[in-house]
Image (tube, rainbow, N blue to C red; front, side, top):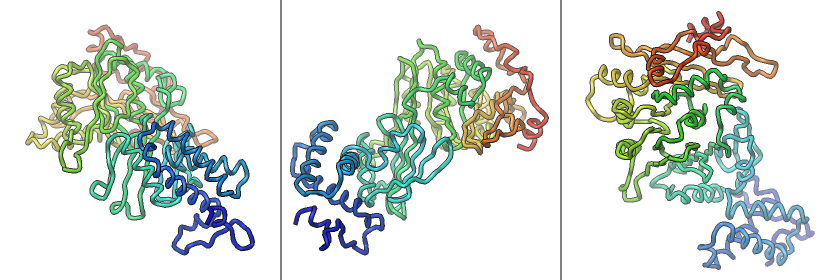
Length: 462
């Protein structure tokens, strides 16, 4: 029976009896037609062994030609516009990323969350919203996941049901499949901007002020060790990319990440990526292995995409043994929490070190903690910049140099009007920077709106 005939009832209407076990969104005739044409295309491509070795562009051309033949032969009951739409959607399934392809191309979408085949959410301008995007079935979602992870040599199956991967543009991908994902495969994609953000762009979005970016620029050029902290999705990696632009061109940079995300706008960059164990349980290369290896690569700067475990100890030792100017990120709620988490991660290295020795290492290694937050209005802002001063008894002492002015209120659209303002404290490392020829103008710490009463009260509550 021809495909066109299978889609028509006795009265000629393009309908088909729906299986009770079929997902409800398949009850749509267009969705059923798309599913059946897709299967016919897959059968034809599978019958051509040469298609397996084709480049993406060649395979896409072949798929479009084959689709046109199928629809002409089967007299598919669609208008010309509907046929064009069907070809685009099925082509995306074959060579692209299925129904989420338009979301990946949408510059306003910063995150895509596929909870199941019908629940696809996106983040726009920092706020979540549900879309009408759906997958035909779980197999279609699994094909997209497999296409992403196989491109970088990773796998996801029952023996390894969780995976971190990346898209060619550096966007971060996380996938979880059954049995861990109870309701079916889930896919989360954190998109990266196609353009490399610079300090001017960061200032224009309101995430920082010109004086703060000038301060951070001097700190990076002066080779201070900087830690960027913040919650999930606050933009730590984006800020790390921005401040990395302040590194002088002549320096050798080694970046270390779980999945390559950083876009360092410098020529002399070596990028290292960790590797999970293979199906035999061998071949794993951890972040800690890469940090130790990076010390043998004559780096001027070591940038760790994110500290999650025992590599924190190796990073601290690198900072304390001549590799100044290193950068890194970690998850934390506040700058003080960031140092507490660093202590915990050093303990994860498995060495029986006394707590005071760990804190002395942290106090000696870290110069500055830059904290970034996603505010209630969806915007991402630098909310605190703190100097690590040293040790007082058994406590690491810190000075807050910049703090966010929550007391400035909100505009009519619910957007915070405040920005990070100086607290009036001049950092202790000013003299060290001056010895290297970098002067911090006093104006950076004495703006007219230094600290309002509302900000002081806010800081007291926190």
